Length: 200
Image 1 (cartoon, rainbow, N blue to C red):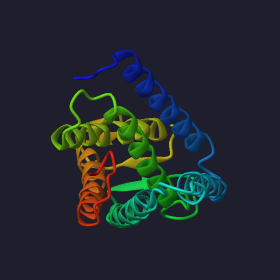
Image 2: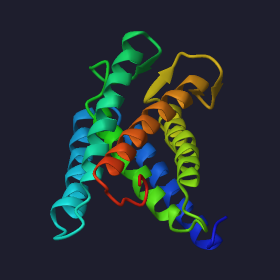
Image 3: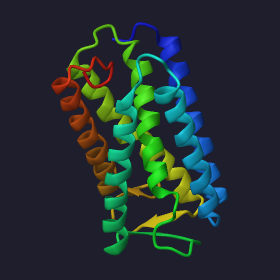
Image 4: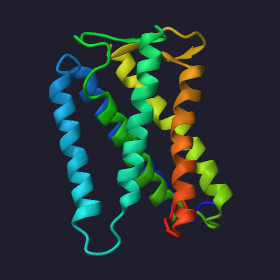
């Protein structure tokens, strides 16, 4: 049960708008993978400074751990997919563009902040509801962003059973990576008694 429906809709609308802008940006400037990589890296550094280094208290190191885990998992998955011919990037000189690991890292940050905001609107903030929310967001939002970049010619999937260019297998792979990171961070919070709104 959502306690504030208008706020819930507002948060989701802003999140979708950010994904549209990011997808269009990558799609329109796909030939300039180094420039995109630098800009995404600057954004990551800014996020780390703002949420980890600058605060005197409540430094959120989980963000950094989550971004690195997601970036690593993402690049392993990308290497596997491209090497086996499951998908292919276009109009770049490398098989995997330089910006890809940074995009994965920012997707983690995006989902974490979105979940944090939406969880506060849940009437009962149980672990079961948090996990269900994480699964829904990880299934839908990254794939929504992929639809935009695919339509703008950034890459092509060669798996069957596609919805607007995104195959069923890709939905499952995205969910697997994000929920694996979710589980790892949950156990870190449990082990070190970190009271995080998303993972505790």
